[in-house]
Image (cartoon, rainbow, N blue to C red; front, side, top):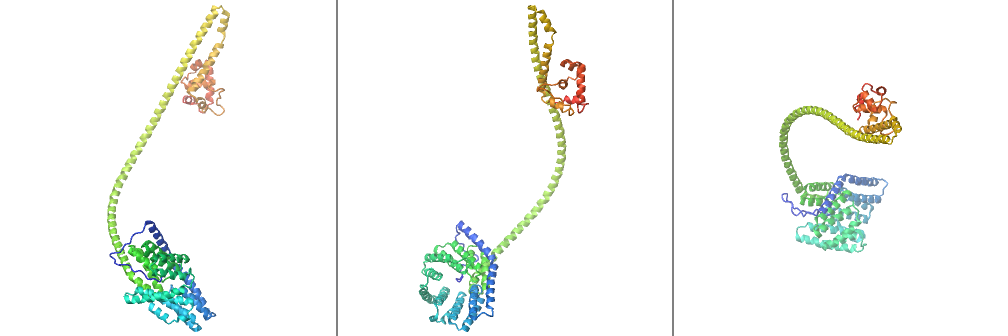
Length: 556
């Protein structure tokens, strides 16, 4: 940037002026822009290396022994373009080289062009008197339209800065008159240009600023910003001017910072060392109390100024750098003092913590011993619980067996009473039949009825059926459990559901607690020998012959 750093209203380390805080949304936007700028700052060496590479390529072309003096002049001009805002000393050296080449070529136009480039360099570096002295030596009669515009632009620039620098009213008024004289001369030349050309818009914007018509100046500035490319000095300069015009218009400090940041980013990306945006941003942040960032940015700007070797930039930065650095040191001292206090506090806490840890350790040992005793007690309690569990299981089993016995009793009592009632009914029917035969004198039919076993067989069949049904109702899993005790191939199969075979009926009675073969024979109306043979046969088919009948008694 060519404009100088705007000095803060009051630099006092003990009383920093804080500006009105912008809205939250704008603050977030500024913060994100600052972070983006700091990322770009880290890449400064990359951008500089890219510029050095372009410069080295041009120097190789310049050293070509076959290059004519005219070619050397134009290559040198391109080197001046690269160095112009990158290194004052290198720019000066190559301009002087071109002055010599123009003189050797005896080319008046090239000589005037190089003289104007030197005048511009002196003006942008703050050497206004030297620049004006050079301009006074140039005859305007032979200048081309482009060079005459450049001539007036440099004059205008010198007197613009001189009038702002002067503190003597009479001298300032003199510079003011000269500024307007060269401005008017420039306007006559600019009027010939296309209304949308970059130079026309640049001069027109400044004209509106001179009239204090900031709103109109901002409108033109917006057009210029749209035409400029980010990462160029042109964009940086336009954004820089916009930052201060927007603040002049509405006093919005956030807008000012926003465009200063954009300008600074563009300066870094284009390796512009002769810049003012970063330093001006540092001043604003310092006034707002952000001393850390202000110190970082002003040092960054100082490094650029040192690299460029601009006395004007050194002068501007020297007005604010000591104040910001002192404030930064004060902040660091405060932080250091705070850290010392915190260290003392942490040390005290550490001592308390160590003491607490000692007592905690002692308590831990006691708790550990208590846990071991508790563990022993728990093991004993676990053993007692297991014993109690076994006892509960035994009680449960006994309860279930008693419940089963009660169920059997209830089932069999009901079955017995029902059966007994049926037999009373049958005896009554039989009695009536006998009486009928006697009364009707059917003696032969009566003898035939008495001699027949059909009634007994039929009743026996009904008895077996009732027995099977009642037993399987009480022990529905008896057949399956019984077969599980027999060898493979010896298992008993029933023909019908809810029926038992002779063998199963015998062992059903054993399950009910009737183990005597005579009793079983009497109930089932078989001979004792038959019952015995069936029992031996089935026992021989068992997996465990010795304990077979005891296991049958446990089938549920």
